[in-house]
Image 1 (tube, rainbow over the protein chains, first blue to last red):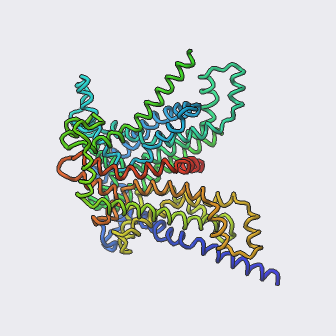
Image 2: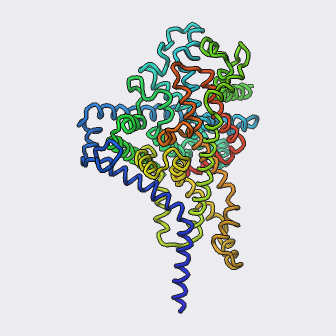
Image 3: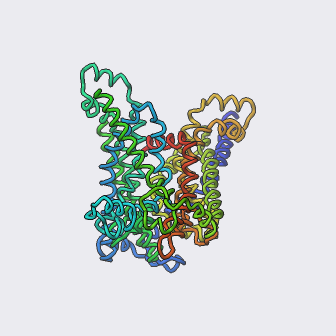
Length: 305
Length: 276
C-alpha cells in the first residue's frame, strides 16, 4: 500500500518535472540536436544544398579534401586558415595575458576614479559589433587616420599605401590589434576577480619577510592566479577558433587570404561555393582541434594543482 | 616623493589605456558629424571644423528605414532575453528542486552544448529553419539564439536555485502550493540577480551578433541594425560620415545598457569562467 503510493508520487513528480523541461527540451531537440546530427551526417556527403536526396555519400572524402590534399586548393586554404587562427590566438594571448594582469593589479589598488576607469575599459568588449569594426576600418584605411597621422608627423616611411587591412603583409597585424582591443577586458576581469580572492594576510606575511614588490608578484600573485590564466587561455583559444564577425567585416578574409580564418573559410565554402559537405567537415575538424587543445590546457591545470 | 611619482605614472598609464578604449568611439562620433568632404580630407580631427552636421543622422534615417531596423534589433534581442530567461529558469528549477528520471543526462546535455561551435551547425540550422518556413521571420532568428544561450543560463539558474534554502520549498508544499506556484511566486521572483546577469549577457550578444541574422534573413524589411550598417557600406565608395552616423545607432543603446547594468554583466563574465 505504502509502496504503491510512493511510486505514484514519483510518477507525478516526473510528470511535473518534464512539464518544466518541455519547452527547453523541444528547442534542444529541434534546433540543437537535430542540427548537430545533420551536420555530422553532412560532413560525409557531397551536397550543394536544396534537397538532401540529391546528396551523394562520400565517406571520408570531405575530410581528405580539406586535410590531405584530395582537393589541393582546399587543403592549402584550410591549412592557411587554421594557421591564421593559431597566429591570432598566439599573438593576442602573449599580449593580453601580461597586459590584463598589469591593469588588473593597478586598478585593484586604485581608489580614486577606479570605478569609472573600469567601466571605460569594458566598453570595447560590450559595444563591439559591426559598427565598431567599421570604425576600425576607418582608422586603418589608406587615407584613414593612421596613415594621415604618420605622414603628418613625417614618418612617411611607415605609411601603408593600401591601408593596413589592404596589404597582405600588415592585414593580420591590424586584425590582431582589434582582437586584443576587444578581448582584453574579459581577461582583465578574470584576473581582477582572482586578485580579490587572494587574502591580504599572504601579502602582509611577505611584507614582513621583506619581499620586494617584484618577488611578491612573481612568487605569490602570479602562481595563485594560475587557474585564471588557464581559463583565460582556453577562452582565448576557443574565441580565436570561433572568430567570424570581426574578420568578416574588417577584411572578409583578404587580401590574398592573409586574414582568412576557419570561420570565414567555412562561411564562403558553404554559402558562396555551396559546398556544404566540405564546410561541415571543416567545422568538425576545428571542433575536434579546439576540444583537444582545451583538454590539454585543463589537464595541465589539474596536474599543477 | 618616489611613491608620488609612481602613482603619477600609474595614472598616466591607466588614462592612456582608457583613451585607447574610447578612441574608436570618439572617432566614430566625430566622423558622423562631418561633411563627406571633411571626413575624407581630414580623417584625424575629432571635432569637425566645418560645423556639426547633425543632419547626417536624419539623412541616414531618410536613406533607409532605420527606425524599422532599430525595432527589428530590439524585438529580436528582447525576444531572445525573454525566451532564455523563462525557458531556462524552468529547466533550472526542475534540475535544482525536482527529482526525475534522467536528471544527470539533461544537465550534462545542456553543459556539453557549449562545446559545439556555433559556426559548425550553421548550415543545418539554416536548412532546418527554412524547412520550417521560419526564414525571414523573427522566430527564425530568435529560436536558435535562445538555444545558444542555454548552457550558461541553465548552469546559472540551477546553481542559483540550489542556493535557495530547500526548507522554503518544503514549507510552501506543506502550505498547499504546487511546484508551478512555487516556481512562479517564490523561486522566479527570488532569482532576480541571476535573471539580470543572463538578460544583460544575452541582450548584448544578440544585439551585436551578425552571423546568424545575416544567414537567415535576406528580406530587407527584416534587417537588424548591424545588417543595415553593412548595407550602408555597399555603396560604390565609403561615405564615412553616413556610415558612422548609422553605426552610432547600434553602439549607443548597448553602451547605455552596459553602464546601467554593468554589475550584472561583470558577474556573468566571472561566473561564466569558473565553470571553464
